[in-house]
Structure formats: C-alpha cells, structure tokens
Length: 508
Image 1: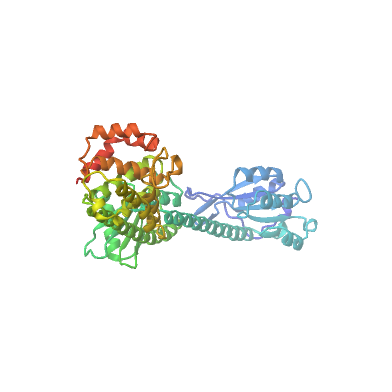
Image 2: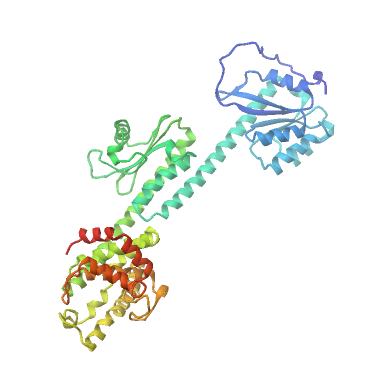
C-alpha cells in the first residue's frame, strides 16, 4: 500500500504551532498497519488532537501479533484503527476476533481500514465481526479521520461511564446487603467507614468520612456523630467540617463540590442525615453520584437499625421486668437478673460466639428462673432446707419455665425457653430435668448455669448468706468438668476482674 493511495483532501494542520503541554491523562489510540507511511500520516493529522481537554497518545503496531502483545500490556486502549491485510490476508479480522472473543474486551472501539476492499467485502465484515466502523483508505480525509476519532472516543467514554455506574450500583447493592446484616448501631457505624472507602476504591486511611444525625426536635444543629474516621464524635470534627454541615442543614440540600461531598436526607420521622466525605484528590462526578445514592441508603438503614435497637431495648426491659418479678416474689434482688445477663454476655463473647448470638443470650438469660412463678410461696421462700417432697416441687421450675416460653415464635423467648429448661443441667450429666451432659447441653444453658451459680453464691438468699469470693472461686475450680463446662469455667477464672466489675456495677 503506497502513501499516494491515502488521500487527504483537506489541509493538514501545521504541526509547528506551539501549544501549552496538556498534562491530563491521554486517550490511548492504537494504529495497526504494516505500512509505515500510514503511521506517519496518521500521527501528522492527529497532532495536537484533544477530546474533552485530554490529549491523544498514539500507539503503533506494524502487525497483528505486535498489536496483540500491545493490547495485553495496555488494556485501557480506547480506539484501535486496524488494517485488514497485513502479515496475512485476514490478519486484521483475526485480531478483531482475538480482542472480542479471547480478551473479552467489549469497550475498545474497533475501526477497520483497508486499501483492498475486495479482500474482505464490507457487508460481510460488518455483519460477522464486532466492529464499529469500516473505512477504505482511499476515502479517509483529515476531517473524516478526526470525525472518526471524536465518534469513537465518545462511544468509549460512554461505555466506560455505563460500566462505572454498573460497578457502582453493584457496590451499593453489596453495601446495602451488609447493612441489612447489621444488628447494632455500633456495627453499622463501623461498616459505614469501610463501605465508603470501598465505594470510592480507596483505603480507609485515604478518606475523611463522617456520618451524623440531627434530631427533628432540635431547633439548632445538634449533631449525633454515628461514624467518623476522626475519633471523638462531634469534638473530633474540625470547625470547617461543622460549618459546612451547618450550611447544608440550613439549605436543606446536598452539597456537591470538588473538595467534598455532603449528603443530606431526611427520614419519614423527620431526622436529618448527613454524610460528609472528602479525600486528598478531587471528587469526580461519578463519585458524587455513588455517594448520593449511598447516603440515601444510609439514612434508610439507620432508621431500620435504630428501630430494631428500640425493639431490642424493649425486649430487654421486658426480660428484666419478668425476671425481676420472679426474683422479688422469691424475696431476692432484681439486680441478680441484670448481673446474670451481663455475665452471660461476657462468657458468650469470650467463648467465641458472635455479637448477635451473645446479645440474644444476654436478653434471654433473665428468664432462666421464670418457672418459679408457678412454685408455691411456702416452698419458694422457705428459709430452711426443703424436704424431699418440697425439693421435688422446686425441681419442676426448670420444666415449667420451658413450658411457659416454648410456643413463642420470638427468638429471644425461644432462647429463654432453652435456658430455663437447661440451666440446671450439669456437664457430668447429673443435673435436671433431663440429665443432659457435655455438649448435649445447649451452649446458652451452660453459660447461664455458670453465670447463675457465680452470682447466687455471692448474694444473700433467704436460705443462706453470701459466700466470700475466694470460696466461690474454689468451688468453680472444683466443679470444673463436673457441674460446669470446663472451657467456660476457665474463661471466668481467667477474666475474674471483668466479672467482679459487673458484680460491682449492679449491687443489691
């Protein structure tokens, strides 16, 4: 193919014109042709070419094989102008197949050029190959080549934007799924920071993030910071950040700037939600779109998790009230159930249970003696030792508690049924009412058994005085592997200060 066959009817721009150097990231365009003059003329025509304030960087390959290696090394090539006939009659067509089918690259815009159109009929090529344009070299002029570049780069840009939005949407869906799995505001707050970083493709350390709530009842801004990459709540926020959030709160709309993003959303209860995000580099428009959708999801998720926490608080209070009612009926302190609940939670966490499971055990453990509500007063409050008949009636409280709770569909009450029935089982199988042993006893039953005994021995009861702490420790050591799960007994003994601190926090 000679240079004379490549016709430019328009004048080629003078390449000697001086211009300021454009430092923006360039568009990568690959020219694949075995004719060196084609590369020279293409470079000359496209000298100083820019699209959306970004320059052009031409890459040159003189064979299909050379182009394959170059594309492997430069996966972000926006446009490739490929000759059909090179080392073989259909080398260019085979290169198109390689790009689309083997590399599975659907973004790159592909334009075929040929000086021998009879070798690859245009209709056949357009129909059977995933190309974006087909040109005869004899019809390509300077203006047509530039027009081809504008069209190809626009298409590539739009495809990249669509892929970015698709990837962003997938990230938002993934983030939302994670929020749905949160069981507490603490967990939710921690997740916000990580998910914002994930959304922007950054590390936590590379962003500044703050999520805050303003109560609808407050006339003035009174932020409740639920998550911040700067510790210290509101006090940890700079005056500049607080000022910007205040402006957003006054204007009642989100702020989109190159320096930061501040999302503003209200819930159906009227609470105002803010998400402040900044990073060391400029926030792009795509970042703002993703953060805008994400902050809306944060507002909804916060409302749902807060509602769950309120329901959990209500359940906790009901559990305490029921447990305390039983304790007061037996003339014992209601602080016992609170201590047992906190002991149980600590044992569960130290035993490796999840935060969620530990919290369920904590909420259910106050119901461990619920069955005592059916025990007659003269037996329940007898100051002396029970006779055989009385003791037989007392033993029934475990099964009675289970029967009261077993038909509930509430998971906390279901756990309460298990604990009520099994907290008097023993590791060695000599407990009641079922004589279960070892791991056949539910972990919640084993946990509450130890927590209940540890607290009961240290408290005054109608039938005994409180034991000194060293005697309680000695009994737990002696009953390790007999009455108590040995692993749980070790946890209590190895973390005694934490358990004593709980005891001191809830005195009789």
